[in-house]
Length: 53
Image (cartoon, rainbow, N blue to C red; front, side):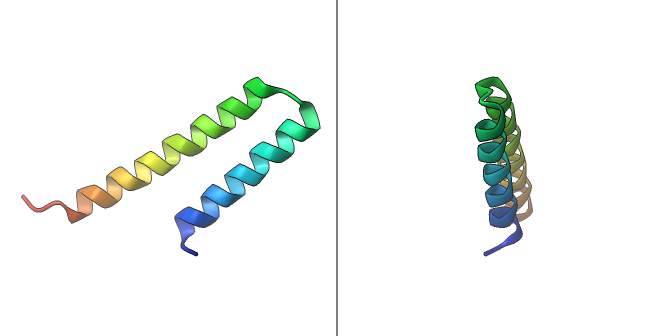
């Protein structure tokens, strides 16, 4: 498992724990959106390294 997958798993587990603890779907949404933003940023950085100009 690579670092990105580990970070995603940690974020998912934190989001689930927070939702179960507080039962606050808005907070869960905020965490999931932040995790998605991080994943997309990492993918963009990876794609930029692979692009030849």
